[in-house]
Image (cartoon, rainbow, N blue to C red; front, side, top):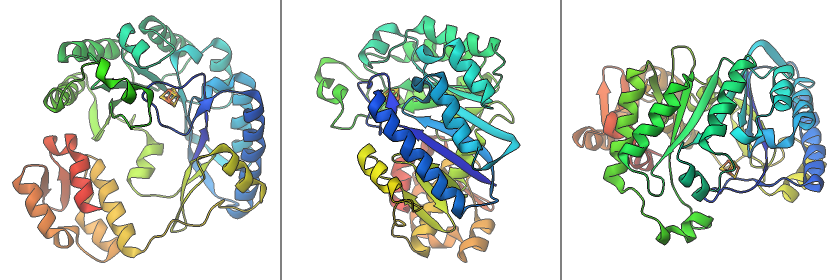
Length: 373
Ligand code: SF4
């Protein structure tokens, strides 16, 4: 079955470190977005008739910034066109300050059964620097409120490498996050693109260096493991059975459909990415064709390397036999030179039939991926 992603390109305001395809919420832009989303879903429904989805993911942006009525509409737009299985995982990203009783009702009525809550840190001063609109108390209140309303599958996002953050401060964030007893935790190391506000202001702050960030990452792995979480991806940890089924489809290189500006599709062997700009997206959707854009250039060689890198993100690693069956080549042979180098430097382990990142390899995954892609 397919995974379906819907990108909501609006936030209440832009965080200082964010370079995602999102803009401050505004009525006119929201109306144009809804019209285009509806057109895109109509066009796709004609092409993928009878296909059932077993995961649906509303991401952004901040889907909950739409308010309850629009949020209901988005969910109805998707479920009205695609058969979403009764047992589907339906996730919505949310920011703490936007998780009102009305929003929680709309999510519940719309079939959302998993929340991904953007907490980031419990340090109020740092939240201000990041341009977040909530404080630590609001984050905890939002979590308890969601739980009281029956949401029993909640993931929290936490960030390390933040301005002024120490290992002690990070340890306190982890302890406060774990005290909520979430089902899933996603960790993000701060990276700043040159076009974001915090990059321009970076001289005003002291950031943890690479060694300190590595210590934070390893401390998180250990504390999460002690609390009953298994690491299943470079940045993701779950209690047994609570892995994000939608994101697993990406990493296992399965098929998925994406709607909205910047959303990606992997469908019938092709990869497509919608224009990130709202006006360009609306113009493409108005043509009534789907996919909205031509497939990204690819070939068997590129598909194979993409699958290798995606698979290595998972702690289960790449199964050499399954890889060979799919691509006709054993990854241990194909990447012999690169793997020998990474095994020697301790970033990769070749264990029987699987190729996996080691603990240092998980932290330095981008270095490995750059050589293998
Ligand atoms: S809430 Fe998320 S998507 Fe929106 S501006 Fe902040 S980091 Fe970016």
